[in-house]
Length: 175
Image 1 (cartoon, helix red, strand yellow):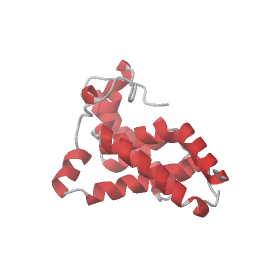
Image 2 (image 1 turned 30 degrees about the vertical axis):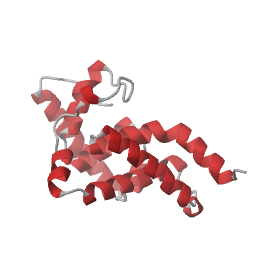
Image 3 (image 1 turned 90 degrees about the vertical axis):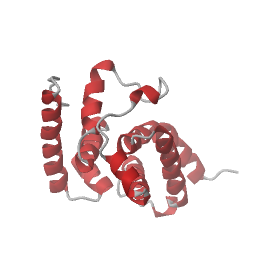
């Protein structure tokens, strides 16, 4: 018989697995690896359920686990593969199944430009602007101070704007 933890983890998976997958995919740019790391995130949440103090929302807690799991994975990669994936300038959207990310055509340029940003810029923009986390939640997920989130977000948005302008794409960025 399933206990309360099982029911809650299943509910969280239903609510957040797609958002967590998309976040991990933006960091790894590898569809299969993002699926695996998403599953690993929820396994870790299940195993560490007793450590969840509810000082933050379950969504924030899960994204923190996803972030740490993904960073651990990236650190373990051979240096060449890590650099290749981490600094790749274009996400290979053509290889994904049609419904995987459901990017709108008008958003493709933003995602491509975003994938070419430095890791911290990409992470903070993804969490704040694409996933809608607050500054405090983003700071908790990344284990940063709120001021670091604000300054990194500002610099990241400037870098993203420059990339889009350079490529001839002028958008009013995520206001």
